Amino acid sequence: MRIDRRLVLIGVMVIVLSMTMATQYATTKIGYSYSVVHPSDADIRFIGSDNSSDGVRVLRIDGDNSTATDRDITVRLGNITVDSNKTYTAAFGIVNEEPYNVTITHINVSASNGADYMQIWLHGDRDAIAGDDGTSVLVWNKATVGQSSTSSTWGLAAGDMNTSSMDGTDATTSWDDTAGVRYSTHDTNAANNTDDFVWVQISLDVPADADTSATFDGIIYVHTRATTHDA
Figure 1 (cartoon, rainbow, N blue to C red):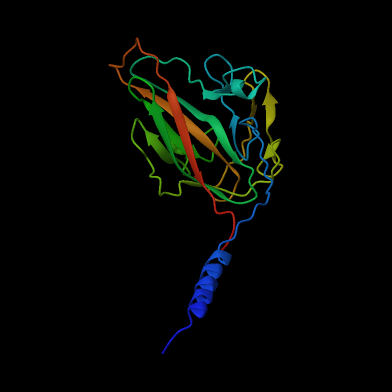
Figure 2 (figure 1 turned 180 degrees about the vertical axis):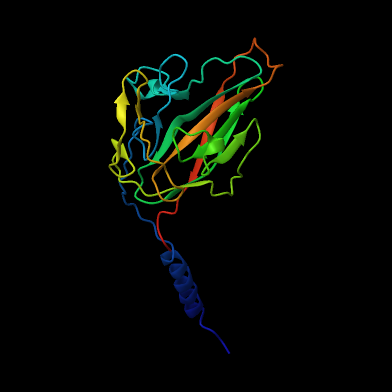
């Protein structure tokens, strides 16, 4: 059987044309927006409470708050001697303003130099030491992780996107102009998975052989997880 070469050519052209038509290109535009805000005004925000040795909040801004680069948040724990323990039951608070629950999975510390004598708890009672607070969870213990990254260490209930208060409208989080952060001395206890805030206790447990010539500093990392919608 003979096949007309013209028919073969048409068939090839149809195949090529079909392949060409299967590839499409388009250009469109999608807008986006976000804001860079103060650490005390973020959706997951940090507030001060206890004062340090110098009479200023433990949690403070390491700058003058004038620009974003002058808003580095830090924890100043003061001076401590050897063979002693120093504890701030509410070194700072963590508040959720997102309209959905957020879980703090774990906290870890990266020490810049020297040994790590820091212990960190999450707990609900601002003015109670963690050992006397049944809600407390040890999350960091002198260079050792207290809770793993797979843990649900503390659940923060959904917030209301209002950074001037926490726990609904029960507690104001006013500005401390000296520390440069919002703060609260709210004494209603926080319950895990029920309230939108939690207190962070920090203890320094310094041994007798600690290096008195060293300055100890580093970074505290707070890790969170949230499910923003149901599948």
